[in-house]
Length: 363
Image 1: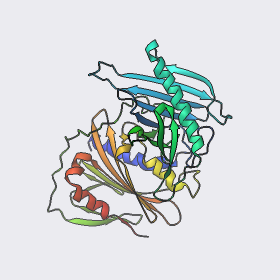
Image 2: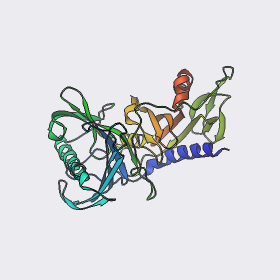
Image 3: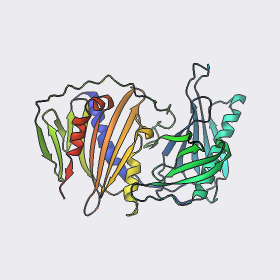
Image 4: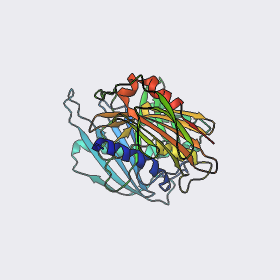
């Protein structure tokens, strides 16, 4: 088996296993619907700058956070790439952000003063406004709320969209009075070890996908066959697919289908469990970032369908992943995944959509 194939199988086995991560707590002054997990992070694109700017927030525990500013190189303006990271310690007993210490990573210059002030201000302001927003609760397919606010850092009157699936502040998007996007989530995730550098090496997600290198030659003569898994899930695949292990099939090195049963996340309240799992399905992995601008969620009766795109910056690989989560009688979930290189999916949509549409659970 090729190293690429081994890596991809490991990725999907790991994906099915991380749902049991324990939850922690939250930022000061409000109680989120979904508790944040130690190591959870979120990145935003801030459109108020004259250059491309991303700002990320990382949660360690109730008294330790990190804020990172990253601006890619701007050759036209002759601006080099710039990254700044600040570790904040907070008083966990306070009902607002009250700093007890901070540490800036790396060397800084006088030119960084405005950026450092911005990092302080945005952390304070997002938390303060999240407190004033009150409860952000899901109601079926609607997982948040919209609030009109006055936000001087973003020019005054704005509309803030909150979503409980977004970590930390629950802020999904901020728009101006004329509808222009000012601040928008681009990715989120959770670090899974002290060696996981996903937060500190993030450099953005592309506006357009350029991955066109993968090739798939479809055999129109391959006949589809229904496969019933050991736990009662049915998948219709043709003879081009090869079973690599129990409940996992490969289409060469281009696509993977898997089926599993996963438990309710440990510590999650029964009325929140579905949304805890959905948030974790929207998380980036160690070397692959989910693009929040290319996510769609479909809510059905006891079933959720997630269509998302993962970008691997180092290899410039783009993968489209479909996940179907079905509530299981007696607890837990049936969990179906189809992942395929995005350029192959785009040129063979009906083929892969047929596999997704043919999936069912016998219960």
